[in-house]
Length: 256
Image (cartoon, rainbow, N blue to C red; front, side, top):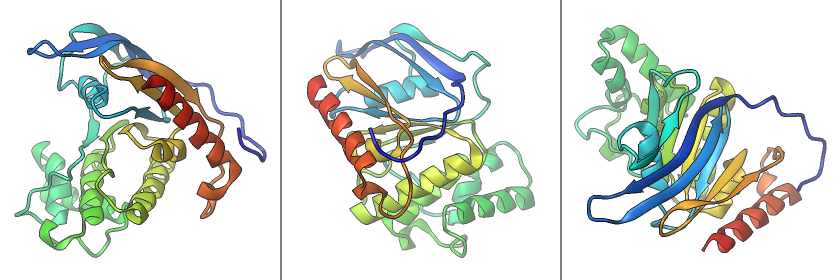
């Protein structure tokens, strides 16, 4: 898939491994069954699937917010002290400024005011929001609120960032820009990103690998390993992206 020279990828080092994950809710609904998957340090791994296939449930199990009914989550080097989580909604405190929203995890951790505000300001600047530190959520666009949410998730510099369809409600232009911003953050920090989406185009653009889930119950249907995608303003119109998009679409159709 794709033309042009390719750089050899470094050897994958496993950050976490899912071993036979299954989850049944108290009402009896089996959301996941037998999901086994390894996530490598520094990669963007997209979990792609239709609504209701257990994508968000799987992410919550990785975060420790849900205990699996079956299987286990393994952390070969130990569970990270910090895991960032970005939800579908920005979930900001409406009474607090962007700076104070981002600084919240540091405040909870007991960090002093001057240091946490400096770190929060740097996180906002990294997401393109320098100058909006004192703005309140009600004065920000949807895309800007999501940037604040991402900055809050990254302010503790977590090794792992979990993202649950964070751009689904945004317009196409804003979504594309945030995709690029996310890749820039990953490149700068080496953050591992586990990204849930139902968009084949988004997964084709963002991912080093795509795990496709089949529904009812959610189970791993395909694991796509993409060659590196050339970047730039026209990346989405080039053959390598088209090949990724076709592969993701075919895998999603086969999983239905």
